[in-house]
Length: 159
Length: 150
Image 1 (cartoon, rainbow over the protein chains, first blue to last red):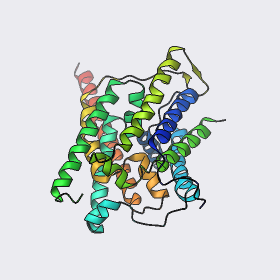
Image 2 (image 1 turned 90 degrees about the vertical axis):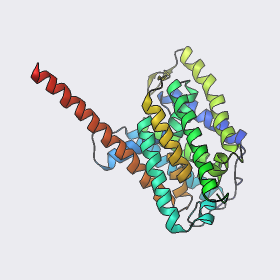
Image 3 (image 1 turned 120 degrees about the vertical axis):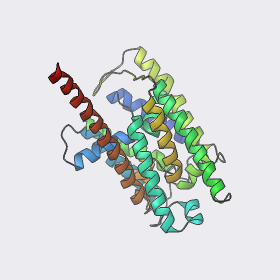
């Protein structure tokens, strides 16, 4: 709407800002910024389970709101689109939809098994110097880079 | 201020920073994993470099938090499920080109395929939760069996 922010903030602004946010949440609540935990609590609430950590549900809602404020209000705003730039150029929608869904199920299952994702282990766990989080992060970086390499060969370098 | 407000504001800021860094775009993640652009590595690395020393210092000086008692960092030892889970997460991350938090920002940025990614993540987490509960049930049954036999 307002075109106040560039298309991509420089890493040396966005990265340290995220570092400060991690510190603030520890100082206020002694908690990591884990996104998969927010999914687990939100899904529990939707299924009317007991013992839900409500602040994690509000955190889940907040991520939508923050994304909306930046992309639609602080920037000039984006049109409704499919997303997935390069992937959509290589594959038709009939391939992209099952591919994205299968990848998402796999990463959700993996995050559940590992007890966290890129935010909980990759950022906050590593920042706490947890060896388990460092092992998770090193493992997912390795398999993600290898999978990307395989996809690149499978599409003759198109992806 | 309530803890729920802290949660909401943390989410708004986290989602806003991810959107500001374009982490909700497939191309940002893809060019990192192709090792074409170090942006995401620098983004994550600088967030860790800023927070890690401060968290270490805050824990050492026994900081009290308003909502979570004394600030204490969690340091776990690596177990097999960390490696297995991490390996599957990485494969899914590369295929889906997104992870749990950026998938939500993808939806609010107007990218319709985020509506495919988000339910998939919910399903994957749910499948693991069900499996964990089953394993727990088997362990409890086994324990009860030992008790009744004893």
